[in-house]
Image 1 (tube, rainbow, N blue to C red):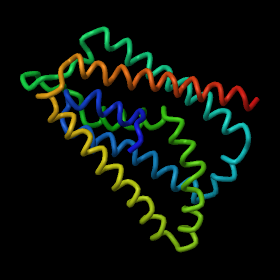
Image 2 (cartoon, one colour):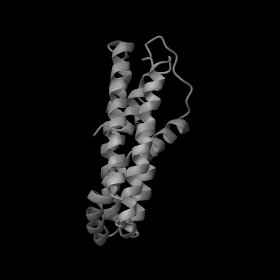
Image 3 (tube, rainbow, N blue to C red):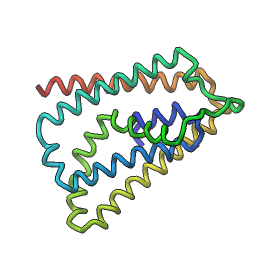
Image 4 (cartoon, helix red, strand yellow):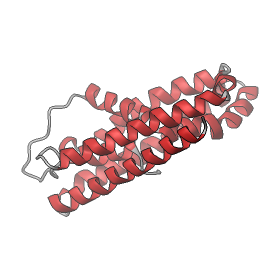
Length: 195
């Protein structure tokens, strides 16, 4: 539920694509999470414990967050980010495009990497001792929560078209983009401090 690139992708696209963006972005997000669960269960945590990995995650993730924040700010100057109204035509973005947006939004979030490196590693090692059913329960429980939240957020934003003006929508996206730039800067500083 924490705000990040996945939430911002949903907020920015839901007025044009409707509620379906929530489940489709979650599919892209969940594919990466499945790969992460499989990799951690296979022993990736030993590799991730190396000092250079944290530096890489901080520098690459920080750069991607700043890039996303600046991209959103630049988009606000054009008509791309206007809040679609009830009379606006839906965009023709395919479901696959929205799944890939979920993948990109997930990869661009350094918190995602940091979270998987730290919190779930112990859960997965305990689950792994109980067998593959426990690992699947951990994964599907986690993804179910993501799906529920992302679907709710997408439906709320898509139905909120009647109450949110272009100006309010622009302010929400502008605040999100500034937050991304701030977080990206924090990650870059952290990455350089680890050298």
